[in-house]
Length: 173
Image (tube, rainbow, N blue to C red):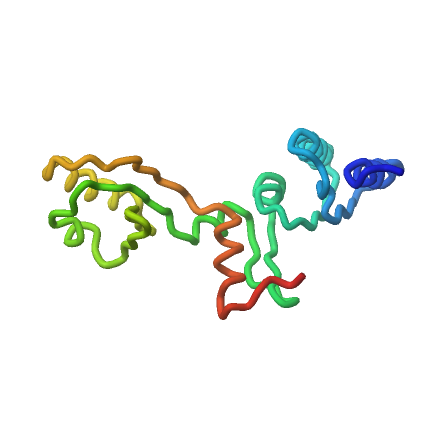
């Protein structure tokens, strides 16, 4: 008669009852509301702080990014990437996104690696500091505002999507 989230909480509580040194958690926050999920994350972080080893499987990349010391991304039964989340994310480009009212000489500044989508210009850049310097220099010299400029570092979810998209192969269910 328990809800899915309550069943998950009970599963985790039973797993912790024997004070194990190694704990396997398979999709522990499935069915949790956002507050319960964050509470579970705090509990897992506390277990790690006590020196416990937690082996976690999850489809929530934000969860893996926040909790894991190491991540393995599996596609069709094969590990396609493995390492600390920050290292996996650093290997992917930063996205710069903005709109402009006109593009005088912009393409000569940002190069052919840009994309236009519904009026937005997106640049994926391995060296965002230099790209932003060139872009803001162009903006100032042409008196064109970079409207709604955002700079977004690749997330673990971005890495996962890119790796599972390769060859149009989907992730293993």
